[in-house]
Length: 200
Image 1 (cartoon, rainbow, N blue to C red):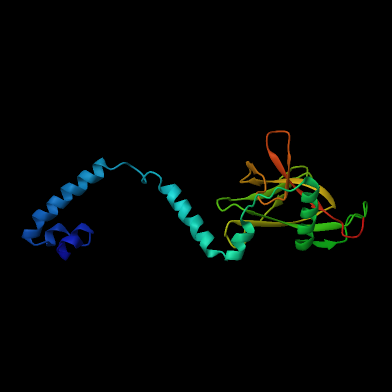
Image 2: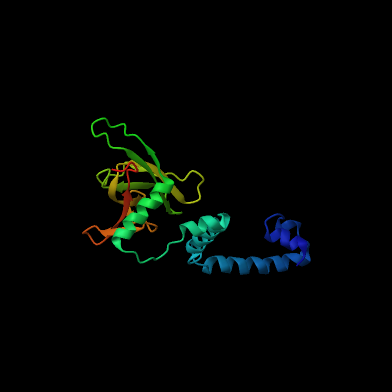
């Protein structure tokens, strides 16, 4: 194609500046493009949003280290309930920091537990559980914008149930929890067991 005709089609050259021999070809292109504009469906192509979201998620996955992906990959492991609670206590012993309670009334030690969930499309993520009366008072953070939300919460020793609330309305169960318990409403709560680490 003649570069002057290309400039005309790109809007960089007015029709009057084209040589006479190219104006007829330009008119043919104008008719063809007008026809395409009239018959083309309005809006973005069907499924474009899903393809864009998939491409963004794939790019995020590829930008993470391989060991991090391995840590986040859900696994199905059949474990008896007692062993599951013991394993949960052991896992949280590794990632938790123990400190004395600021609560003088109970004198119970507190354990700081880190919660992690991968929700790339979320705007907000809150942690709810029996430790905060299922109210979205604990907000998780995504400091580097990679879709992995984290939060550190002080909990008393014992067995606790929890879920995540996405964008204020969608309640999801932690896919990486070691144990689950039916909530009586058709869903499952994730379960975490906290040890006091002081022999009590």
